[in-house]
Length: 296
Length: 236
Image (cartoon, rainbow over all chains, first blue to last red; front, side, top):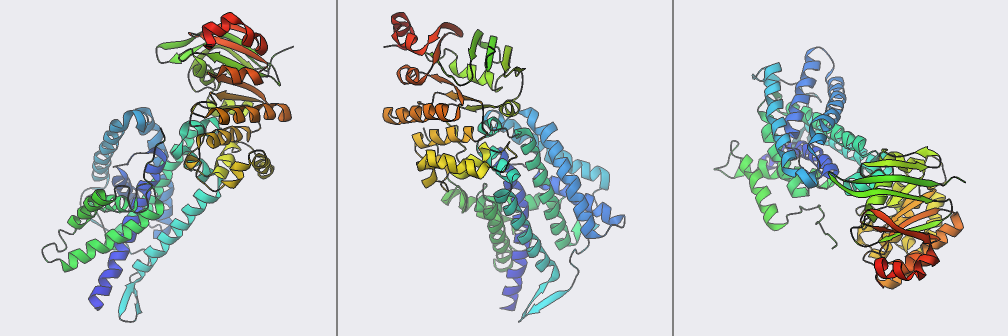
């Protein structure tokens, strides 16, 4: 029983991280209508940046904040320089996907070129201790991850539902043409959306590396797969769905890895693919996603 | 007297295809002006050229300032609001959020009061204020699109085929509201329409567009009674 509860806690913790990367995917999907395959590698780059600041002696929290700031700017620049010239999703969806796949490879190579390919030790953001609740012990790291995710969701909710800027982002996502006619500077909103997603990715990357205590250039590809599973499960257009999807995927993969003998630790990624497959078969729009209805 | 909006030798189109072949027209403050014409005559393109949605050449002067070559988000700040054809509403936002988007360029504190005023004028919108715009009927969406455009307190309202896809009774209601807005607020209206009868009823003047050129122009009652215009361009 204790082992089971431990696994639940670990699953939820990992799920919270998957959920936050899925959140970054959802932020871009909602504003542009396509999936950014480079999200994981953008987060990888940001996390190496965080590590570099920390290595230079900056406290880890400040290092993360600085990296989020740089990532926000870089995300905005990527939208302006690499994405927008390619065109919009209605006319050039395939080209856009190819560009993000190219970015995935380029960023991964860039990280290897700058920081090398060997693993780096990444600090525990919230310290190494644990809290005992009954028979279950929960690490500070897990509690911190939950808290960060909850605060992040709360802030995003306030941004989207309570501010003019958030209203503008949602308007552009739904109807860019009418939004620009209303005076919204659509280009700037798209840059903001990409910047925001990159910053969220930087935060998620730091949580991920911190949980593993390790950072190397290969681990983020897996993270992206888990995030895809989470976003598919929750629905690509729902921030809440992304987080719930992340928690479920985290639980399923950890429990499947623990209890399904032939899967084990090495093959638990298969569980994530299984989640994607089943969702696409049963409920393609995801748990919280809206079915696309078009009036004709 | 100088006109509120004046276009001279206006050309424009999509890529290499020039749809407008040099239009001259004007709209005076307080007028309702209608542009009539068959499918493909260039009515929609004219409005898109005016609001900066497509590249256009020639001269467009609004309130003494040249607006040609400006982007849509700049032109709305000059005081020109454009309700595009079909889906002028932002489908995923609620009715109230749509109205707030309409006022997004305003910095004053009377936005809430304006929203209440539109709810008074269009009670159906008030009933559905928390409903997604995309789930409403075509007529309700058209009313919302107009109200949203008026939320930025424009001096000139551009309307693209408000009757498209609406039942005749609903179309009549939309036009009556439009005439009301023009009378009460003094908002100048430039509307393009295929539904000539109704549009000419509320319009002061009209232009008939054919293949990217202005083929006829005049007072609305003259156009409505002109046999040759009617037969050739209005199809009744």
